[in-house]
Amino acid sequence: MGRSQELSEFKRGTVIGCHLCNKSICAISLLLNIPRSTVSGIIPKWKQLGATATQPRSEWGQRMLKCTVRRSRQLSAESIAKDLQTSCGL
Image (tube, one colour):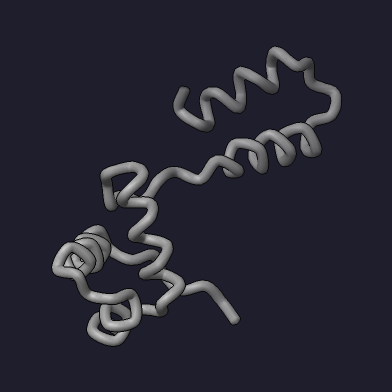
């Protein structure tokens, strides 16, 4: 089964709004036609971070580094670090 698209920030906010109105996870899931696992993942993240925005994925930089090292094994560590920083926008 493939992954679907991420929920919009509006829909995440709607989930939080329903949660604040004391609706159950199951009721929110049925009301918004979102899987229960998604609803139960949004609420704790909102409680912990206080925001509904999607957080950046941490493994992206690691994958980029592995690909860069595999492509150019002869480069020095400094040049690989510079390439990685420019591609990540740091």
